[in-house]
Each structure stands twice: as C-alpha cells, then as structure tokens.
Length: 477
Image 1 (cartoon, rainbow, N blue to C red):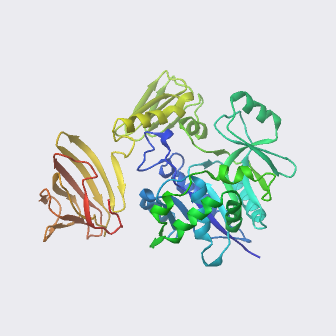
Image 2 (tube, rainbow, N blue to C red):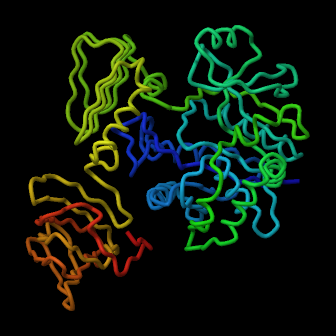
Image 3 (cartoon, rainbow, N blue to C red):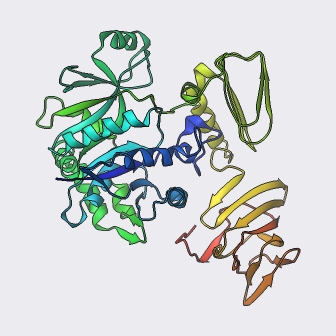
C-alpha cells in the first residue's frame, strides 16, 4: 500500500546574518551558496528524491512570504515543478502557524498525507543517506508517529538546540535549548544527544490534533484566517487581518518540545549526511570545500598567505593577503569584512542599516522581478540610471509616478510602450520620454529579451513612488 507524502518547504526566513548577500528582498534561501542551485531548490529536490515504490511524493507545497512568491515560483519552474502550491503568509508568525497553514492546505478534500517538513536554508552533503533517513521517517509517521530528524554532533556547538534520546529505540526523552560551550561539550561526550535539524515528518491530522491539544487558540486563529483565504492561480492567500491576530510561535515551542511524556510521543531518526543549517557565514565556511590551508572561496578570489578564511565574490576580484579566520563578502553595493568567529553579529549591522533608514539591507543593486530584472547602475542627486531586461511576452504594470520622469532607450529587442492614450513600438537605438504623472507601461511583444536603459529624473526616485492601475502579477504596490 502506497503512502501519500507531501513535501513542505518552509521558505519564510529573512537570513539577516548572511548579509550583504542575503537581503529582505532576496533572502538566503533563494541564493546559490553551494553547488549550482539555490538553497531553496536544493531543499525541495531533496524531499522529492525521497519518493520510493511505497512512497508517493506530491508536488511541493511552499509556505513563505508573499514578497518572495515570484522568486520561489520561478526557481520551482527551473526545476521542472509546474504545479506547486505556494501558501503566502500575510505576516510573519513563526513556524508553528506556517506549518498549520501547510497542514490545512494538504488536508483539502479529506486527504491526510504524511507531511515531510524542511526549512529552505540547509545543506546536506550526502543525498543518498538523507533519502534513506527521510524514507524511514515517512514510514514511521504513516502509522501516526511524530518523527524528527536528529543530527549526530561532530563538535560542541552552541548555536543549535539538542535532542536527548534513547540510542537503542530513538524515543525522544527531552529537548535542550542552545547550551553554553561547556554544556555542549558534555552533550557530545555523552553520546545520547543529537542536534535538532528542524526537519519533521508527521501526518497532517497528527499535527492538527497535537496543536489543538497544546495550543488550541493558535489553531482556531489560523483556521479563521484559512476560512477567509483567496486562491490566485497557484498562490493561496489566507485572510490578512485574521492572520495578524495569530500568536507567533515556533514549531518546537508550540508542540514538538512538549511531546515527550505526553500522549503525543515523538521519535527520532538519526541523520548522518553532512547536515548544515547555514545560519551565519561561519557555517558557510564549514560547509565549503577548503584548500590545503582551510580557505573557502567562491567567485573571483585570489589569496596570498591566508588561512581559515572565507571569501565570497559576487563580481569583482577580491584579493586577500595574510588573513586568518576572516570572512570577506563582496557585492555590487556593499562589502563585509568580519572575524569569522563573530559572524553571528552581522545581524547587528543589518539593524543599524534599518535604524539609519538606509536601503542596503532591503534590496541588491540588481533586483529580480516577475517580468525580468533591473540593475541600478548609477545614481546621484535627482537622477538614477537603470538597466532593465524584460522577458519575452512579459510586461511591467500600467503605472504612473508622482515625483519622477523617465527616458527609455532600447538597447536590444522590441518594446511596446503605452504612454497615456498612445501605443508606440520601439526597436534598437530608438527612445521615448515619459513625463512626470503620465500613465505608462513597458511590454516585450517579441521572442527575445528586451533590454533598455532607463534614466530617471526628479525630486524623489524611490521604488515606492509607483501607482499601479493594472498588473499581470497581482501586485498593488
């Protein structure tokens, strides 16, 4: 008899400790930090790989931020996943409400699949071992068990929670908070403790029953938001006002850590697959492939007499001399240099950027959009220059600006421009002018990418100076 399993990828994190590469508009789970796929794509594929003769894996179910929906959808399509469901959280309420949304979606039509739940921002070195562990967990969860994947620690780690269990039957006895260094060393020496990977396997009905037992008010609040949901293609949008009233809590605190000794016993399947949660740049260094002196590089990097150092270049050459245990991360508009042992403190820089009203923590210079992308290549007082690329058949919204005018010059491809009541077809080396306050739209009617240079001029050039009248992608702001 086949087991119906539902991959669930929790993709709502912000990843502030991996700034400047991770930003609010494109957090770490959608970045390529190892291999050729983003962390989100890797996490999704790992779950899909767990299908077996007795395990039927459904199309992936993603729970995440509405602001990232097009990035997630595009990355899924790159993987050949054309029928995913994306449940969009109207506001961040931590992982317990997010998993509840997934369970309600998976239960549509009276179904009760085994949910295979993973964060979107982890790496695994041995995919075969991971697949075997997940398959075992699915089979145990099919009988009603709550199963967690536990990682055998290879070092004292103060940044992870721990699981204590009976090593013979792997019944979880208790959960431990992130320990100090001395306690972590004792846990590792004991042999009965495992890192909590944050990956859970259980039936949808099991989660809903456990939440009803431990946090009935939370379940009721999420169900209220779910009852008011709207479906837009593959996007499911719970009611925003109702979801804002949902208590914010993690899966661990709401349910999992309260299961030992309750009527919801929890089991653990050991995972020894080279797991890493990439919580900070030090973890990225640990997950990398080091040279003979322990350096890890990505992109255009040249090191001389360096050791234990991570260099990540997004474009320009980064050269290092005499560095030891340092992190250097280069992007088009920001460079991070940090002591590797203090990489957790990068989030303090992100907070200071936010407090100062700066934008480097929000968006990269190059910004992905559902219709293509733009790159802000130059700016100054009262002007900004952008390189804009529009996919074949795609269109920007019909919009206007209160504070800026725009000049468009076609570099390659064909542009269909709406300007007020007029429609204009432009080809290579042709241009047009959009006056301040004029309704306009840019479309690519061709079969190849459209590339233009946009020169903005005006008293305010922020991205929030957009009034949308029509939008193919359902954006209001």
